[in-house]
Each structure stands twice: as structure tokens, then as C-alpha cells.
Length: 86
Image (cartoon, rainbow, N blue to C red; front, side, top):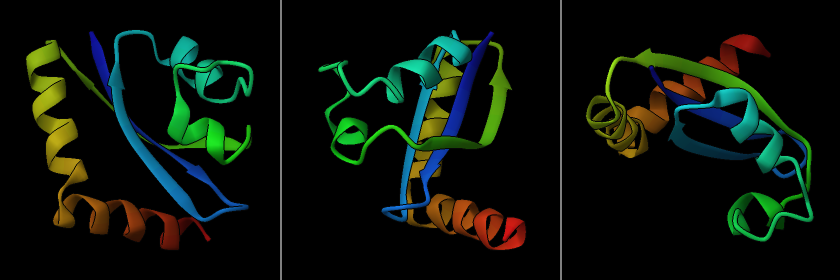
């Protein structure tokens, strides 16, 4: 199984959308400020919180969904989630 996810940094009001096969590992990598491979999330520190996830059967489907969520309408969907959470 693969996951498409959105994480949010409340301090900087930033959203990151990605996909992975190991969600727990990926989230810990985003919050590891010593990890040089995640430049975007490293730039904003280690306070990323999971706000959305979807489980998909194949990487191809996960990549397709990630692309949808990164579109204007997908980002609006994520922003609506944020506003409903508080």
C-alpha cells in the first residue's frame, strides 16, 4: 500500500503534500532537521503535523492522487480541511 499525505506547519502556515509507502518513517524524516534530503520541510523546522492521508493500492495511483492534491483544487480541498479543524 501507498499513502498520499498532507502535513502542515502551523508556525509558518505551510502545507506539504507527498506520497510514500512508509508513512510513519516519512513523517519522522520531515521532522528531522538534520535530514538534508527534505529541503522544503527542513527550511521551516520540525513542527510538521499530519492533517490528511489516503491509502492507495499502487504507487502509480498514489502519484496521480498526489498530483491532483497539488493542483489548485486539491490545495483548496486541503485548506478547507484546515479551516474545519480549527
